[in-house]
Image (cartoon, rainbow, N blue to C red; front, side):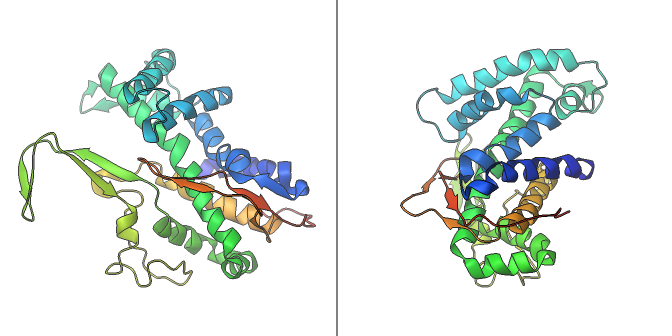
Amino acid sequence: IGRSEGWIRDLVISLIEGFRSRGECNFTAEYAEKLPIQVFLKIVDLPIGDGAKLKFLADEILRPTGKLTPQQAMQGFFDYLDGPLNARIGGDGEDLLSRIANSKIGDRALTRFEMLNMSVAVLIGGLDTVVNFLGFMMDFLAQHPAERRRLAANPVLIPIAVEEFIRRFPVVTIGRVVKQDVEYEGVTLKAGDMVMLPTVLHGLDDRENDEPMAVRFDRDVFEHSTFGNGIHRCAGIHLARSEIRITLKEWLVRIPEFEVAQHTLAVSGGGIVGSLEPLHLTWATPTYSGDAR
């Protein structure tokens, strides 16, 4: 991920410059749905032009509209991945799908089912979670000028701000199926039960974080489960942090003053991954010259 930051920054700048002079944008469609998806498709070496199709399949799993059943959406991923995985088995590619296709558990190769499920899991994570997180973060900054101006004036705070935004705006609800009957703290869980764990509950627990609803850039400790924990910790944590940090740095130096466009409404949605869309932002066209790097 560290070696990728240069071209990720180039993409961030290109996207921002594509609408900066207009003084407004649909942040969801023109930035949030483009940056993470284009970055991730490059990492897995899949065509950028397939992003819309793959995002549709991910949405039908995470926030179903009824256009497809979850089973049909999953099969759509399996059908799509069949060719790319076949082409990479036995190869020496360094992209993420090649690594999955040729990885082993102990001394055995992955089964086809394991390979497909692992590939779908990383695709869904890369195509959706940061997309929606960015919307909540930018909505907050648009509506809280004091915090926004503090970051713009003190970019050294951006790494801390990244951790605070991750704590404050988790978007994932983690689901797990109970494998066998067990009693936990007086509650009987039966094999086959689904346990849903909204990650938002941890970061906003006042027993874990002081003033949990407030966004503060002076915290020393950030207690949350936004990226999961233990063996279920998100594999994309470093990529997500990089995308968020670079977005904040390059956006605030180019568009330091912005707000939610009047007479627009961003609607929050539930599902396995929460969403906020469409987010329309507006600003007085700023003067900018130079390179924020």
